[in-house]
Image (tube, rainbow, N blue to C red; front, side, top):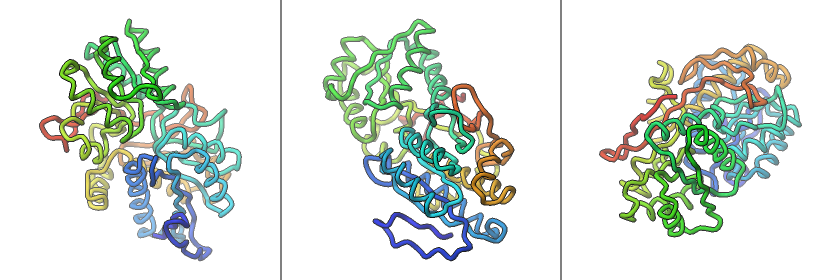
Length: 372
């Protein structure tokens, strides 16, 4: 497999004219969630290696052209323009929703097919487009599953510690609407104004039974967890992180036992497919750690795109026109795209959703609390 990284980190390999180039976006440096980016890229690279080992796309190898977004929407949009000019057949990747939204908008404007791997923001584009498809479930669906888990556990007074972002604001709105329909309340704590100690005091004042971290990782999420967990007055408070911060090994390394019993969303089924079970073993070897759901999303992205390229060729318009005909067995089930209410891109409508946490008895092990 050929893989070309950004000029700042490696010298570009010469293009031999026969490879099918695929642009890849991933957060590989701070302030991006770098562990998510590396898991995403690991899944993508593993799948590309297998495609190439099996003969490529009608004899042509896939070649990755990787660009680090560093969680910066402007940097991502510029990368999409550059990749389009460099002749990539399609664009894949990205973890951060706001960044993926910028990438999707630019890809739509340029007529570059984009298969979004992991971002969940419902409104990924400004209007309907045939150029963009997505594997991860929409935020509204996942966060409603998460809200149902909290409500069924008896939580009616929720506080959210949040930073300014369309992603966090959208999540807050989903939670507020869902809780209001069941007689619950959601209070916002603005982290641009409050320190971790001030968050702790606000929780006591509002008598919240759960605090949700709608905030970046590791800062400020990790200091907030430490502040809350070390205050005996908040011993009964549930901490939650729907965006998935506890999924990654860095969370456990930084927080240890304090990072357990914090439910979050991940996008895995109760059982992986036979392909998924095989891929899990290979990803574990590649990462020297348990693969996150993001690594499976990366692998499935290439499985889908390779099937599209084999069946429809590498011309951009034909790739974009193929999304409705996709029916590919991935690591987590049969992948098909459709139009779903509230989204303007081609969407895998029934991607699996789980609420899980790290087991206090074994922080390296996850407990499945709910399948949605």
